[in-house]
Image (cartoon, rainbow, N blue to C red; front, side):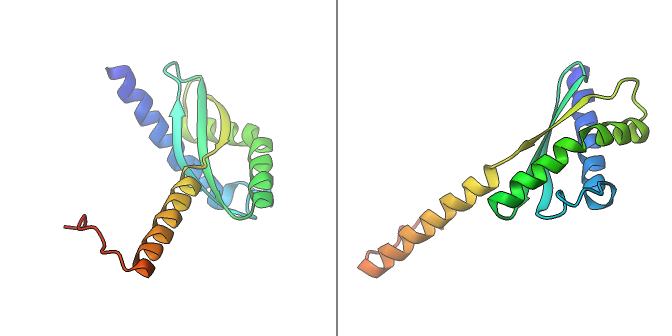
Length: 130
C-alpha cells in the first residue's frame, strides 16, 4: 500500500512539472500551436515508465503537430524531470493524446440537440433536475 501512495505522489509531481514545462519550458513551436493541457499521468509501479495523457484544443492538424512536438521533446522533458525531481532513476516519458474531453463534448452536443428537438415537438421535459 505504501508503494501505491508513492507512485501517486510521483505522478502528481510529474503532472505539476510537466504543466510548468508546457507553459514556458518547451520551446518547440509545434507544441504551442494548440492549447495543450495535461489530463492524467500514469506511472508504473516500478517508477520506470510514465504515460502522460494530454488534451490538445485545436484542429486535427494542430493536434498532430502538437503530439509530434511533444514526442520530439520527450528526451528534454525527461532531463528536466530528472533535474527538478531529483529522483534516482527518472521514468521514461511517453505522451498520449487524450480524447476524453472531445468525446464528452460530442455527447453533450448530442444531448443538447435531442433536447432542442424535444422542445420543438412540444414534448414535456423530464423532471430529472430535482
